[in-house]
Image 1 (cartoon, rainbow, N blue to C red):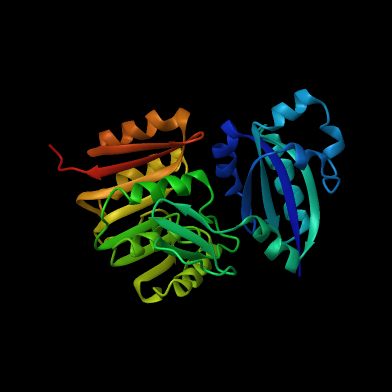
Image 2: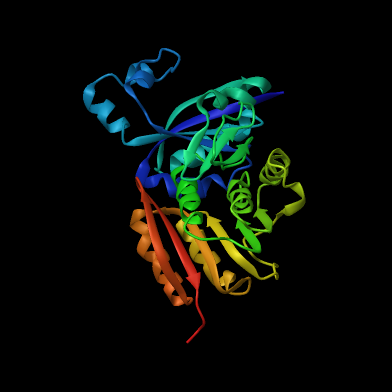
Length: 304
């Protein structure tokens, strides 16, 4: 089976909005790379390299990220290319056909064990090193959530500020990394929710990898709509606009004094999210920053 890889370049400040638009297309996942380096630009394997040679353009590209999006057909890829370029949020870099094996494994050469506080995230295909850290073995497949994105790291840092107990919702779960981390850190059970069927598959596979398949469920869901069980902790690693939509829904599903950890928020939208948290009787306990991203740890309080 063949796949098609569309590579775009996007300014960091536009990344959150671009990710929102990606949900409009029937893609097979996407990957966000960090800023381009001079080595990338001079790599002859990149067909567009010869157009980025002068110093001024190189410095401009350092403020951008690459977004790789995967499609089952060339028609779907080209349709997405046209629509995304029309938003004015990105530039076209390349579109190429991949063999199934290339598609599944191309990103793995960049994914190695790394630490986030007390957690050590280890790719499923690598040997687990001797460590005293809490080990998370992960194979995100084509779902979001390798742990390398700043927003995921911020959620993991926020988790380590509390002692999770009881039941957890992981909303927009992707690979399930946050829910699985909560289980390692003391939670009893997790319900992982996502609109992407690939995410549901990834969660169940990663649960097996970490020996907790009997403690995590995964299902398709639109945020918290239709959920009734009261949680001790809710994750929402989304984008700011969706977090704003999610916060009022948490009031039906989060216990008083329960925690809400959210990220996927760009700095310029931090105040927007804080306002909706305050308006829904949350106390902000701590705010985390990493590059242009913001993570927030908050706690539900009684309505006064």
